[in-house]
Length: 293
Image (cartoon, rainbow, N blue to C red; front, side, top):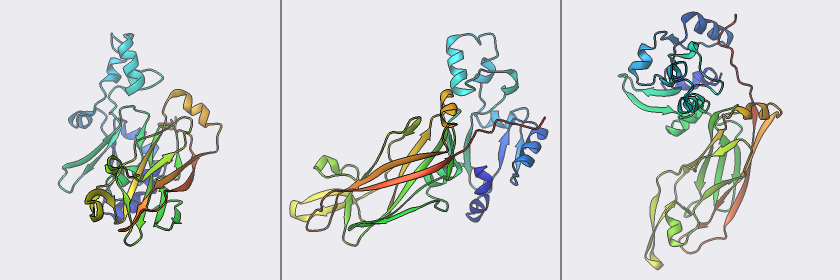
């Protein structure tokens, strides 16, 4: 379980971890023992706390109610509850997600997904918050203009995993690369191009804030990166029903792409560069067992 494996790193950053579920104490105790979980699992078996936080999944109740055969209800159940239909046992479930709280208990960030089968990993959440965790299987490279370190947020994924590829980039002294917005002035913006992979979706690359560079000969002010920065490419393994069977035939998931950029200094621009990248991640099977019976 990724959250357990990252626990010491999270605590080293001053973060505590608690999970809450509508499951009974018995079910949670069994799950905790089976998966060697050492952080608290809290039982909210009447869903009162889940309701107070505004994350009660009301579609679960609709799926077993008098309108359960309504096409709109059936579609909502498949999207928000279960691809296999609703049943009374899952009434009271929350929408799955993560809250980040400060020391006073105030919610500072929240991460929730529209499709219940697609969920952020712990490492992905931390990368989005700018905290980061120890890089896994990092690729290091150097070009004539910059150095880069690229790594996936997680070493293994499964159906519905939402994770990221992080690329840390350090331009050489007196070198800049172009940031979003520079394309309007005819410059090539740094970017990541990923090769299509069945059952995998690539979200738009997340760029950090840039700075304005004044190119005096043309009196241009262009958005660039001159200081170290990070690109985040979020990746989603589809949570569709047919994906689990398709991935079961594979031992690993390989993602390939290129980091594309054009670098300049105060006098000239260099030829465009494409740096090939490849990442191989283990594939895990879904664990649907709630408790030993």
